[in-house]
Image (cartoon, rainbow, N blue to C red):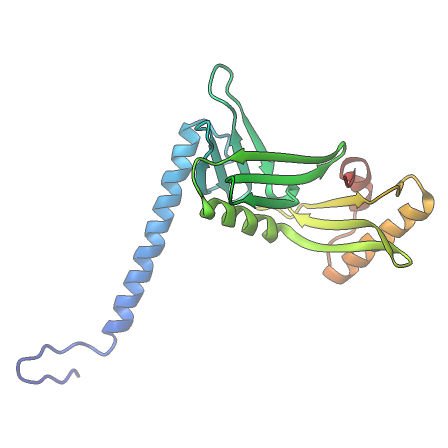
Length: 221
């Protein structure tokens, strides 16, 4: 039972906890509504966002094109005009997120069968939220990474990343210098490195190596 004193109002002992809980709920609800509104606005603008994706934050470049960061990817809007298009970079395909604070350049880099790629946008304002979200999402995909060595020299790096929202694992093999994956010795060492990472992390081995060689191999610049 609450105890009262003259001129005072009794407050149940549990009231502070209840108030804090309500405030936390309101914050969560507000964040959910904000994400829903951002997602709807991005879809109206034409961003080809997947059904299960949610927009985390957005930005604009100097040409007023949108940069949309979702739970699964970043979408880059092309220049305005007829045939305006969008490009999509899955977070599991991005190796690094780079930010030039002086020139406000946001860059994404990664590897593909043809080699290294780089996509960049000059933002209209200093958008630290977009940079932080992009870096966090890329980091969240990383499962394991290890250098492949011959003696004291590293000639390759193998990396495993999980595609957001799925159990699919993407393996990337980046070769350094003159290393050649067609070499039986080099290929065997890279395979051994992948198997070691699979053993350490519990990543399923079935089919991953066969899928990785033709589509996920690139040579570093």
